[in-house]
Amino acid sequence: MEFSMIFTFSTTLLLFFSPSFAKTASYPPTLLSPTPAPAPAPDYVNLTDLLTVAGPFHTFLGYLQSTKVIDTFQNQANNTEEGITIFVPKDSAFSALKKPSLSKLTPEQLKQVILFHALPHFYALADFKNLSQISSTSTFAGGDYTLNFTDASGTVLINSGWSKTKVTSAVHATDPVAVYQVDKVLLPEAIFGTDIPPTPAPAPAPEVAPAADSPDAKSADGKSSSASSPSSSSPDKSSAYRITFSLGIWGNLVLAVFGLVVMFL
Ligand SMILES: *[C@@H]1O[C@H](CO)[C@@H](O)[C@H](O)[C@H]1NC(C)=O
Ligand SMILES: *[C@@H]1O[C@H](CO)[C@@H](O)[C@H](O)[C@H]1NC(C)=O
Ligand SMILES: *[C@@H]1O[C@H](CO)[C@@H](O)[C@H](O)[C@H]1NC(C)=O
Ligand SMILES: *[C@@H]1O[C@H](CO)[C@@H](O)[C@H](O)[C@H]1NC(C)=O
Image (cartoon, rainbow, N blue to C red):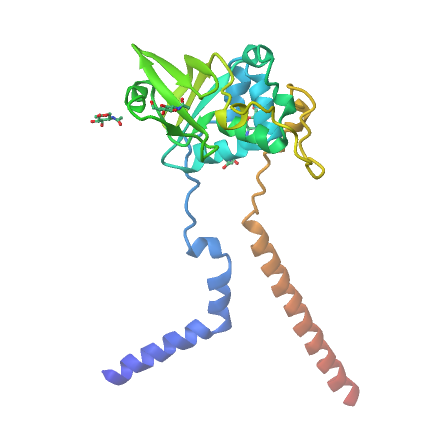
């Protein structure tokens, strides 16, 4: 009884370590280890897409892209439970902006201004009643870059400390992504609250040179969405090739030995 068990065990081991078993075990690997099915992403909101069709929000979208903040926001929308709330000024809000021109900002300050337009949490319009109880709400820009909300019988008022505006419409409000249109550009007090206009620091070769209020829309290059999917058939093919190749070597060897034998006869 015990012997037969040991025998079975060792036979199994032998089988396991035999080259033929190893071959079937390693090729193709996808058959043995079930790969997780590609998760259906019904929640996925393409922010670029959304801001392209609504608005017009071209100026804000241009800034999002030139500062690369779009990646931060899209990542938050894609990969967090918290979600995101973005306040988007219309193009007309940017053209109405005269005194503290955004073009005077350093790339770093401009990035802060754009980050200032979003909260790292999804808020439905009804949630702002609660937020108005809180004195200040943190934005993506962090630190002193906070916003105050007031609920004026259904209208959400926003105070940046330097500018006051309100939510004029909900572009998108499905958890985890909220996008609200606002009347004015949100100017953070941390940048604009000083009497001295922000002087451009000697930026070492700025990657994003904000020459004007209108950002370079060309930087929004459509990177091909061709996700490189390594075809599962390629490892099979290479293994098949390797097997035929090694068979070829053995075949040649056998032929050579045969030839030698014939020569000596
Ligand atoms: C998002 O939408 C934009 C504009 O339609 C498109 O160029 C881009 O490829 C989309 N991104 C993804 C990840 O689908
Ligand atoms: C967001 O998700 C989409 C679809 O899954 C993907 O194509 C895109 O690269 C993701 N973007 C980020 C920044 O995670
Ligand atoms: C709003 O505040 C009330 C009490 O102040 C609390 O009970 C409720 O859960 C809050 N709602 C949200 C969505 O945070
Ligand atoms: C927000 O409100 C609090 C208290 O109501 C006040 O101390 C603070 O200065 C306000 N901040 C802004 C940016 O308006």
